[in-house]
Length: 139
Image (cartoon, rainbow, N blue to C red; front, top):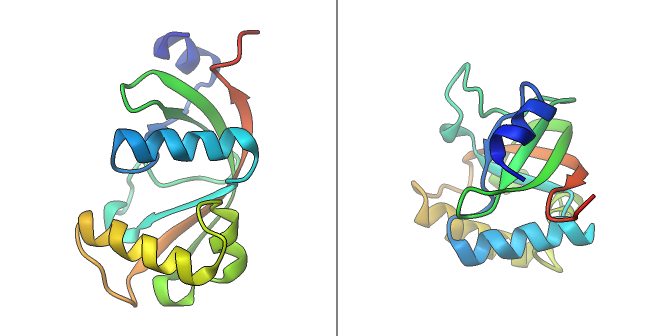
């Protein structure tokens, strides 16, 4: 399905990509599709005040494949700001990428180091979401 068609069906949706590489993006999309990933986070510094990329409760957004094709539609169900050092095990496990909080901390520290820097007290935008539509599934 073409992105313009999806944007027409979901007015007001923002588009985004999970991860910072094609491999990680594909892995994270698969975790959402499987129902294992129901949360995500990003560095607060990447969301300047008024940024349309900031998740909004109730808004439905379009996750893209690494090549820009629409992959999934998700609906944000909760947004909070939390310091990296204060992320709970419950949230970390909801991200679906790790089996433990320690694993989440290790992998996310590496991710943030690759993407603008890491500080243990850095603020994160923490989002919980639900899968609305898998655009890879033919209707």
